[in-house]
Structure formats: C-alpha cells, structure tokens
Amino acid sequence: MTRNHWHVNAREHISFPALDRDISVDFAIIGAGFTGLSAALHAATSGMRVAVVDANHVGFGGSGRNVGLVNAGLWLPPDQICDALGQDAGQRLINRLSAAPDDVFELIKTYDIQCDAHRNGTIHLAHSKDGLADLERRNAQWNARGVKTQVLSRDEVEKRVASSCYHGGLHDPRAGVIQPYDYVRGLARAAASHGVDVFEHTEFRSASHAQDIWHVTTNGGTIRAKYLLNATNAYGPLFGGATVPKTSYVYYFQMVSDRIPEDIAQDLLRNREGCWDTAMIMTSFRMTRDNRLVFGAMGNANGAHGAIHRIWARREMQRIFPQLRGVGLGDYWSGRIAMTPSKIPTILSRDHCSSVFGYSGRGIAPGTALGKDIALHYASDGTYEVSVPISDSYEEAFCDVKSAYYETGASMIHTVS
Ligand SMILES: Cc1cc2nc3c(=O)[nH]c(=O)nc-3n(C[C@H](O)[C@H](O)[C@H](O)COP(=O)(O)OP(=O)(O)OC[C@H]3O[C@@H](n4cnc5c(N)ncnc54)[C@H](O)[C@@H]3O)c2cc1C
Image 1 (tube, rainbow, N blue to C red):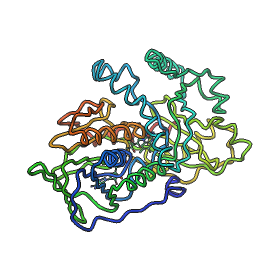
Image 2 (tube, rainbow, N blue to C red):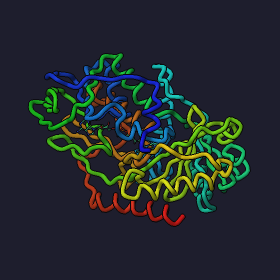
Image 3 (spheres, protein in one colour):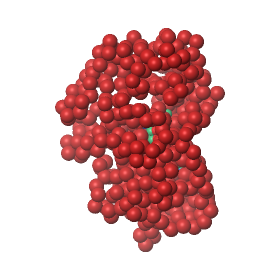
Image 4 (cartoon, rainbow, N blue to C red):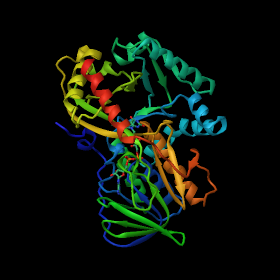
C-alpha cells in the first residue's frame, strides 16, 4: 500500500500549531525541510528572531521522503563542478560540500536526534564496466583533492553488499545513512528549543517588499520580516512577490521489504552502508533498523505508471539479491527531486529574499549546509559569504516537458528490464 515507512516509524515526535495571528520577526522562512530548518536553527543561534511556515507539516517534502544517504559533494564529479563554475568558485563549493556531512552528523550529536545515524560511508555501485570506469575517474578526482575515497573490486563489493551483480564500487568514508524524516523533525525540535516559531499547515500566499521589510501573507496570519527565505524547493514554486523558481523535476520512489531473517540480514549490507548505482535510471538500497531493505529507483510509484515501477522493483530486488526469495516489497512512496540543467544548486537573491533549490538529488548535506550559510549570511548582514554563487534570475525552458520525459524514460526502462 502507499505509505511512507519513515513517517510511520518515526521516533522524533513533534507537532506545531498553524499561524493564526500577525507576527514580526527578523527572518521568515517558507518550507520546513532540511534547508528551511537548518537556516532557522542557525539564524536563531546567531541571535535572530525566526519564524518558519510550512503548508503541510515538517518533512512533508523531499526531506521526509528520501533514501537517507548523507553524501558529500554533489551529484557531479568535482572536476565538472570546477568546469561549470570556474576553478576558484568550484573548489570553494566542493570544499564546503565535502565537509557538509560533518554539519549533519554534528547536529545529530548535539541535539541527540533519534534518526538511526550510521557513519560508515556509502557505496556507489558500478552496474557495468563503463560505470566502473566512471567511478575510477571520480575516485582519481577526489584523491587528487586529498579525499580518501576508494575503489572497491567486484570481490570487495560482494563481501559488503552480498550481491554478485556489480563490477565494483566507490566507497566514500565521509558519508553515512540516516532516517531522514526523523532527522528533519529533530532539526525542527532543535530550532524550536532556540526560540524559532514553527507553524505547520500554514500556506504562503504572497509577499511584498516595502521600506526594507517583507510583508508575508499566509492562510493564517501575516509575517513582517527583514529577511525572507523560500525553501520550498521541488515542492514550490511560490508566486506572489517572492522569488519564483520553476525547475524540472524527476520522481523517485521507494519500497520497503518485509523483515529479513537475521542470518540473511547481517550479511546483506554488512557495514550498513547505503548504496546506489551508476545506471542512468538509478537504483538505491539501504537497511532499516528493523532489518528491512528500502529499495528505490527513479519513477513515480504513485503515478499513472506506478504499477510498472512496483512490479519492476520486486523483480529487480530478487535479481540483485536472490537470497531474498520469498521476501516481499510492500509499502511504497514517491517524491519529487528538483533538477537544474547544470545539476548545481542555485541561490537566487534580491532585496534580502533568497530562494535555494535544485540539489538534483543530493539535498541532505547540501540543504543543511546551504541553509546554515544563508542564515549566517543574513545574520552577519552579508559579510559571511555563501559558497554557491548567488544569481539574480533563473529561467529554465520546457520544465514540464523535461519532467514528463524523465518519467516516461524510467517507465520504459522498467517495462523492458
Ligand atoms: C525520493 C527521494 C530520495 C532522495 N534521496 C536523497 C538521498 O538519499 N540523499 C540526499 O542527500 N538527498 C536525497 N534526496 C533529495 C533531498 O531529499 C532534497 O534535496 C531535500 O529534501 C530538499 O530539502 P528542502 O528543505 O530544500 O525542501 P523540502 O524538504 O522539499 O521542503 C519543502 C517544503 O516546502 C513546503 N511548501 C511548499 N509550498 C509551500 C507554501 N506555499 N507555503 C508553505 N510551505 C510550502 C512543503 O510542504 C515542504 O515541506 C531525495 C529526494 C527524494 C524526493
């Protein structure tokens, strides 16, 4: 059935009221995901008065739906980031996001967030010989920057992943795995403990800027603030005065297995590393604390082609792990990932209003880091520099056509493979 395993099995229990009055703060934030809540927490600890509104609930968007792979860097290999941004700006972003998993795991420790955090690295798996060549190139680029990623042979992968399907893998020791919904809810709890006002079921309607103050209207009350952040990402866009990014997006779905018998589970992902592969229509898997495999891939399991994706996932899990014969895949859910053509996150900014979006599938560490950077930027009145170059406009043509193309491509691959 369609049910998000992370939501059903959450350990961080929080809830917040809807906004029902007019308030004044220093910093208003729209969207209670990793980006908005990290910004809120760091702004509050820097002395700002902060309010966060979410049209739904904390973690409703990508932050409560994702795989939970806390990866360093971006989707793009580091050399390509430098090619796109130039050597200095590129390397600056790489350095910031290389350290971003530290931000995540430190917050988890500081606020004792109950999100099953394991920091044993993640493994990017080569689904083909070309995939392995790509991983070797990535490894060389990271090693040249002093990062100790490591290429694993087919045999080494088989020892850690208990599957003979892969040509090798790339282990990244900076990375780890979390229960993402618990992490985002833990961030909300931490932010509230520093005085942040979080409002759920409070929908942004419009914003106007006059005399250096933003006037934000919601379905409840209004908010006056000097600074405004649009952190709605793939669950936006926002209209009515705030910066309005529209991007293309891909769907990604996950299914959760029955409990796996202990003797099989302990060898399946021996170090509990989270994994994903090099295929163009990517697959991922990781274990839960109660020995279930969360198996995911590109595609919308809740959409028109949902049955195709779900049937394929059952078949594919058995192909990768024949030892799971008889173990079913049951609950499923899907989420939207905002893509930018460059695959590099974008920050738009004008009049003390920012939008940050387009993590292109890698948002746990980047969302946490960039939310923090934006907060420090505003708290320091612009002295603290954000590590992504700031733009004043963003336009992407044919967003809907591209989004439909991604979903059709995933459905076709899942029909024939
Ligand atoms: C299925 C899936 C798997 C993924 N796996 C990984 C992974 O393993 N590792 C990784 O690093 N990244 C992963 N990602 C990407 C990552 O989850 C996202 O990049 C990240 O969650 C974005 O966080 P955010 O805070 O910017 O936005 P979101 O978490 O999407 O939050 C946006 C919020 O804005 C709210 N909102 C929208 N409109 C309004 C409005 N008008 N008024 C008020 N609120 C509004 C929504 O309710 C939502 O809660 C995955 C994404 C998906 C969907």
